[in-house]
Image (cartoon, one colour):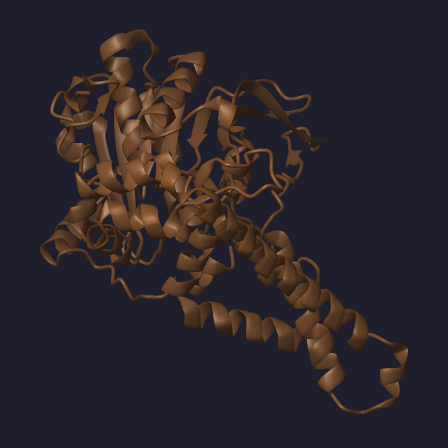
Length: 456
């Protein structure tokens, strides 16, 4: 990767220059079109120009800002609002373990660790997930750092380091923790649990819920997995890996830029995103836009991207997608094999969305076949019929259907009686999974996300 040198830095700074220029153009258009004198002209061009400027300035400005958590107060049984504080309880160079502390409330018996994805977005992408869990749980989250802000002197960070971070976090929280891994970290959370089963069985989590993760990417290929198979590792390193520019503390660190990842996300559903921005500009021009409308709430988060270390991105593509080390139970850490079959006491549940075009049905549920040492009574699976990728952890499907099932699963792992609702739904789900598997997965690579999944 060193051969990229100054060329990579120039490319990184060129992208930042382009982003900065577009933000400036938006601010300029907004300012010029907002002069009071233009009110004397009935031409709607000035209102459109001002609206375009406001939307453009905001959009490109959000790309370099880490969003705040902004978790609303929790209403307690006493009728009082309890404010939520974000407390860092474990700090590491590439990520922190944070706790959402609800003021003046007794600790909840359900303790949940949300493992946030490191796939271009900040952990705040799970804000609505955290908010939905807080009334009934003590919630902890892995808060990953932007690679551009981490000095080169801190060393590397790849999939093995990521897995070791999860091992440390889970061990710190204790055996009563319930781990929920969302999307990208699902295979590594499974590996981390297997490491604990081998090295420190008493520190294993009580339950593990895997949501829309690529345990076996070949089980139901999507555009994401096909891209990884088409490109060689040399091509990826040559075309997408760049050096952090001189503007940031991580200058010289090799990264997969967040702006490059954002471009890929948008390209997958370009028409949907283009329509969303055109509608927003027209609403602003008519005076019907607002600061916290559905568009802004979604895109303020969606456009806020972070860089990943090059070694993490490349090792994820090579080892998780290309070589399928987790799917083949051939993953190693520092040369030591990680045997997923060693997991025998942790209840494991998988959740998939039938319309998921990123991790299609079949990819995540493959984890259950790897758990050869786990009793079938500790395995559960759920396929949400009408949910896309975001809907299974942040949308309506999560709030109305999936969250109640996950809560029941956590309670059952703690020894509570399984509610009839969950037993009944799991029987239905098994039929859905069987049908989806027979069809090779019901997701299409070119299928746009549900409207409900975008405006979460």
